[in-house]
Image (tube, rainbow, N blue to C red; front, side):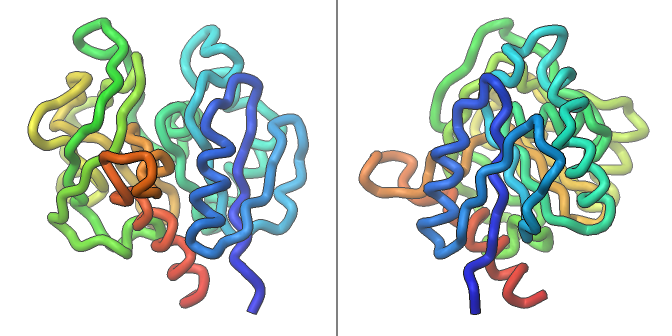
Length: 227
């Protein structure tokens, strides 16, 4: 059986595409480079939207990327069931593209935050979190200036009531996100966005937080094999 092919998107200003590609390779997948200006998803089985500062974060984080030719294809494919994960700037883009509810705004402290952060996996039945157990706590790096998740009260209530909060900050909220939300999913569970960076927690060599992020990548491979 051929390796699962996970597309890794690069926009001008993307920083973490090579880290994401390496994480995919570590779990036995095949990373497929996808360029923002193309309209070809190259037949990938899933898509990863990495962090960074796409288009320099001009106008608003993710607001310009949302209109990239490749994003038009990703939006259509995601609505048809393609698994998509966005981390940090990728999460911002998914919200701007209306694949996920809510928005990411300036950190409550108005300062950039860069640290290892304890989080809890709230939902383990998504394409990207099935390798974890619900309630499991892991440590992932965060590095952002606009990571405060906000949504109107009705949306927040719906997310909580339907189990669509995927990851939640514990032991301190780094950015003031409402309800300590670090990540959410769409209704179908194939699209997930989170502010922490699992792709930076896949090797013991780099020290803390170790390999706590690998589960996001083993999850998607398991999902694709079992599909």
